[in-house]
Length: 253
Image 1 (tube, rainbow, N blue to C red):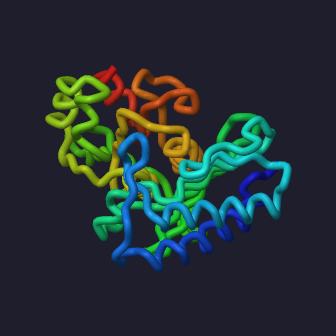
Image 2: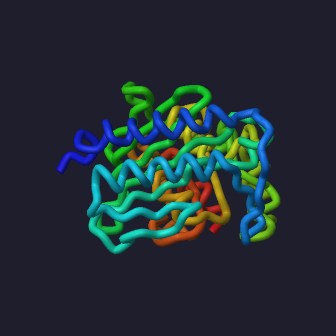
């Protein structure tokens, strides 16, 4: 099955309709709730996921759904959608654009389609492990052979010390040209579209990770967990161009 040909129009439908909701609340006063893990959630997160779940249930009633805000439904099905309506809610509530909607489709537990949709910039990035398209145009990670030329990104610097080895990460910071916290899914968007070279997250959930895998692989990059293993089964991410990934892994592993 050509998953991209089969599901791209529906992915775009989910992205466009959820974006309409998210744009209504962007830079708009709203109540912010704290979930059990102390992460924030807004009405925009909830309404966007609810809409996407409704579309999926009507179009593909046999498919499962895993969502950050409303949990699992038929998660043992062959086809399962994984949704993060606003990846980067902290950025969203602060009026920054470094957030996006993550949509993934799993087939027999393997991610075969991934979407990062940026509602404010109207940028729709989709990958299927073989190719990655930004608004229908092919994109690719850029070729950098040396860490000294690389742009390194992560979501939250404080999480490095909390979940991984801060001393090794400091060594990596000192090896690259530029280090910034332009993170969440926006960092992976910058990697896939050749504006950054390394994107790292020391802790991840399933709804954070699944959409990123077909995108980074489709753009020609390498994506693993911190031990160099399959990120599908991991809870951390190292993503980079093929020329740099092994060098980053050697420092952090």
